Length: 62
Image (cartoon, rainbow, N blue to C red; front, side):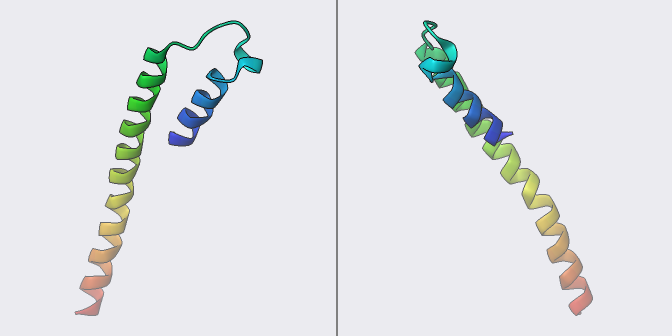
């Protein structure tokens, strides 16, 4: 998801793609906030399996 947000931001800021349409600052700020939230969700989603593996390894070592 974060990769898609970055690609969307790049494409929306490229004049060869959007032509005369000017990308408003509010849209860039909204995409930045969306990127931060997507990174946070991705990070917390990656922590679950890592903690699960640590628990499995810790229980098998004892």
